[in-house]
Length: 247
Picture (cartoon, helix red, strand yellow):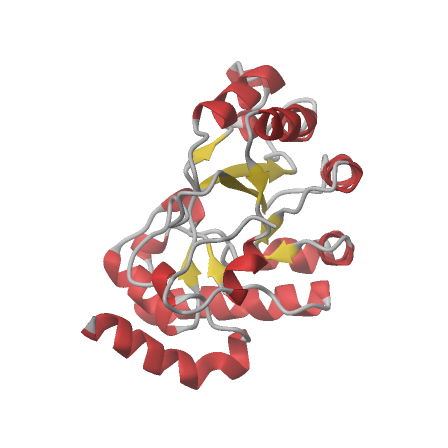
């Protein structure tokens, strides 16, 4: 409790930088599943490479009326500002995935802070919208100390329940069908699914399997009785940590 109170006090000082504060229930540790027993699932997309598949992803989300949250890096935002603006203009939330996608375990506290805040500035500039107070560590490498530092900057650490691994591409034996299977195997109330737009530079063929898998994931998730949750709903909940409610 003392730790959460200290974090809350720090948040008051940084709201001018990060905007709305994250719910207290998401602070103090890594979040790999949202704290709810409702059958809801969150779709999230990391963006750190190129724009491959983004148009297809946005089209599928629009056509199926599904919300998502995109976690671009600051470098991606600087190199592809139109892509980040398209994410925001399509009505989706923007999270923070660091500036240069480093291993945070090898950074000093000032370096880690700079990675978060520099990314925040780049994403704001490119997206023209208020980013959400959610941070995702590169490589999902979290430590209690780094999480506490991110919390003090006004961000909750939002990791993922499962990654589709679509970013590995066909060269690594991945297929869109396997990506769908990995997503569905992770379904549980409050699940957070991690997908990617773009492909690593070394990936042959520049093929975004997660874009191909997305329509099947959305349809299958809904067929199993789950609602796709917009993470911005969490910011409207009371600070006692009430779970998302079905609308």
